[in-house]
Image (cartoon, rainbow, N blue to C red; front, side):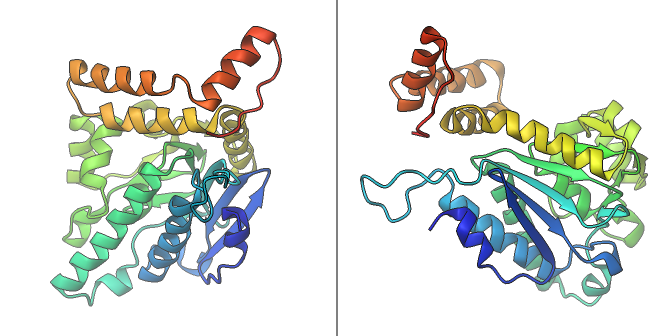
Length: 284
């Protein structure tokens, strides 16, 4: 059974899943609380992304002749409705947590964001409305962020006597630089979509939620037309080299580049280029 087929069997209360043309759209669906990131939402997102990371690009049962599963070639992460992507962690739940419960909550959320970040296929955050606190942290775990004009971003945890705990202290500075990250975290200031784009947090700003989803699908379709193993290797290499000195990053890139030679996808891609035809990548 493919990953796409397995997703259809999941029973989820707070998420809506849609698979079309090899693209999975995951929508957080708690409109009554602006899609707040409750423990249930985190648990269900973990269920979805655990399934994906266990299946995408891997054979079904380990048999030598079993083809890798590339039934999902990209993921859009978004929120239901136009008011909110994910408004933040569920404060009504957090208020009564003990220190140990909070540590476990953060550990689950951080592991989830690591699974999103390391998925072999691109994951795009389509941010419509609020992406605050845990919502901003969830979006930053994706490969890039597209935003509607109504989007707003922030890490307002200091106003609650807290700090970001789902990756905000780490990933925000990777997006916007250390000074801007410090200012946003230390003040809790909220920024709109245009400022998010100017700072480098959002890649593009679209007029509304419909245009936002169209742009996310168009971007992922472009990636899905390429070699899936090359896309996975490129994503892995960019992440591995991200915080390294230039010489070490170049070493990692050089090895990853050499590892592509002789693979079925590389042989098909280069042959198709020489023969002036569309490649048909085997995904291996």
